[in-house]
Amino acid sequence: MARITTNFMTSRLARVLPVLCVTLLPGLANAELESLTENELSTVSGAGIGLVLEDFKFAHGTDIDNGQVFKIGGIKSTDGQDVEIVVNQLYIAGAGSNYGETLNPVNLGRLVNPFSIDVVDGNDLGITDKAVLSLAAPTKVAATEGYDCMNTGAVAGSGTCSSRPMTADFAGERPDIGLQMNITVGSNQSSNLNIHAQSAVIDGSYLRLWGDDERNQLAGQFKLNFYSPELSINSCSQDGSTCGSRIRMSDFALELALGNVYQPMFIDVDGAGNFVIEVQAIAKPAAGSIGSDGLRASSDAATWDFYNSYYNNPEFRSNLSIGNFSVGDRDFGSARVEGMLVQYLHIQTQDLAP
Amino acid sequence: MTPMMRSYLKYPFGVAAVLLSTLAQAELAHLDDEVLSGVSGQGGIYLSGDVTINEMGGPIQNSYFGACDEPGKKCGARLAYRLKQDGGWFVLDDIRGSFAFEGLTLRVRHIDSGFGGDGALFNRDVVELGLPNVVRYQDVQFKLAASSTARPTDPGFQQTDLLSIEMQGDVTLEGNLLVFPTGNP
Image (tube, rainbow over all chains, first blue to last red; front, top):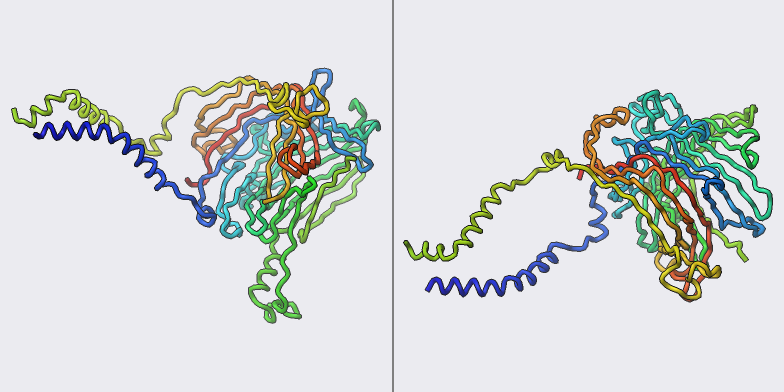
C-alpha cells in the first residue's frame, strides 16, 4: 500500500515539479526584485571603481611621410572660412619631457587615491535626495600629508595635492601634456601654435551629474583644478626649425567651478541644433525676507544664512593665478583673478554655415 | 528484512545518488572573502584585434545614409543622446574607420610593492588591462554635433557640426590600466 502511494507521489511529482518550478521561480524572483524610488536610490552607496594608469604614455601626431594623420576640422571662422587644425603632436607622458622631445612613462592616479567612477548619495554633497554620478580625479588631501601642487621637488607634508612629483627613482603622478598644431584658415598660410604644460596636476577636479526634476534635464557640477609650474605657448615655422619667443606662465593655477549645488549647470541642445550651456541665476529672496540694512538681526534668519553661505563658500568660486608671466626674456610679473562667482551663464553655439 | 528496508533496496541507485550528493556536499565548503582573496588564478587573456566600423557604408541606404563612395551621403555610424525631456540631441556622427592592435592583455594582479610606496599600503588585487603599446588607426573619423532630431530622416531635422576628428597611423598607447573597487562594499 505504501509503495503504491510512493510511486503515485513520485510520478505525480515528476510531472508537476517542472511546472511548479517554472511557475514558482519567476514568482519568487519577482517578489525579490522591486524598483527603487529615486529617494531610496539616493541612499544607495556602492563601492565605486578606482582607475590608475601605470607607466602610461600616449602620443599621436601628424607625420605625412609615415602615414600618420591627426586632423580636427569642421570649425568655421567668423567670416565663414573653413578652419583646419593639423595636430602635429599630442602627448601625455612623464615629467621632464623637454616640451615633448623625450617621452617617458608616467603614472596617473594613486592606488591609495585613484581616479574614480562612483554613484554617491546626493545628500552627502548637498544635492537633496538624488543619486549622483561622480567622475573624479584624485582628491585633495590634508596639508600635513599632501604635496605642494606646483613644486616639482615637493615632499610629503608640503601641500594639499595627492599626486606626487617625479623623483630620481619614481616617475611620479604628474604628467607633461602638450599639443602642437598647425592652424589653417581658408586658403591662408597656416600658423603654428604649441602649448605645453609641465608636471600637470588636476587633483580635486570632478564632474557630478544628476537628473533635475523641475526641468526634466541632466544637471551637473564641474570643477576643474589645473596646476602646472610652467604653462607655455609658442609659435614656430611650419617645419619647426625656427621658433618665436616663448610665452611662459609659471606657477599656473586654475580652479574653475561651473555650477554648484544651488545653481547646477545645465547642458542642452536647442530646437535648431545649437549647443547650450546654462548656469541658472540664484533665486532672489522673497520680498522683506532680508532687512533693509542687510544684517541678520533684521532679516529672516534662514534666508539670511542661505545667502551668507552661498556668497561665502570658497568652493563655489573660481580662481586663476599666474606666478610670473614672461615673453622671451621680459617679465611681466604675477597676475591673479580670485573669487569669481558665476552668477549666471548662458553659452550657445551659432551655426555659421550658409 | 523490514518492509521499509526492502523498499529502499528496490531503489539502489536513488540511495547511492542521495548518499553521494551528501558526501559531495561535505567536501564543498564556503570560502569567505578573506580566503577567496588569496585565490589566484593562472594566466590571463592576450587579445589582438582588428575592429572596423562602417568601412563600406551603413546597413541603411536612403537620402542621408548611403554607400561611402557617394560624396553627398553620410556613411558612418551615428550615436545620438538627449539630456533633456523634449530637448535636442547630442550626436556622435559619421563614425568610421578601423582600429588594429596586438597585445592587449587582461589579468588579475596582486600589488604589494612599488608605486612609490603605495603598493605596500594597497596590498590588494587589481584587474590589469595591459595597453597594446601601438594602436593602428586606419581612416578613423567622427564628428561631434548637436541636432534637433535623433535621426536625420525625422521631420524638422537640423544639425550643427561642432567639429570633426580624423586620425590615421600608429598611435602610441603604453602602460597598464588598473581597475579596482574603492570604498567599503
